[in-house]
Length: 49
Ligand SMILES: [Zn+2]
Image (cartoon, rainbow, N blue to C red; front, top):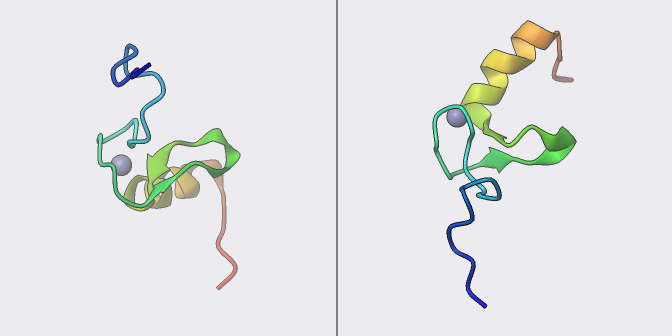
């Protein structure tokens, strides 16, 4: 019943830096906030500040 390690495909950690804190799963990104900022700039995602 415990599927801790299933090839690591369903982990909640950042797929870029493996950080498991503040991981954004929205939009199927699965990256932490820090990486999100970098990626967001590349894809042109702008925060509404
Ligand atoms: Zn990251």
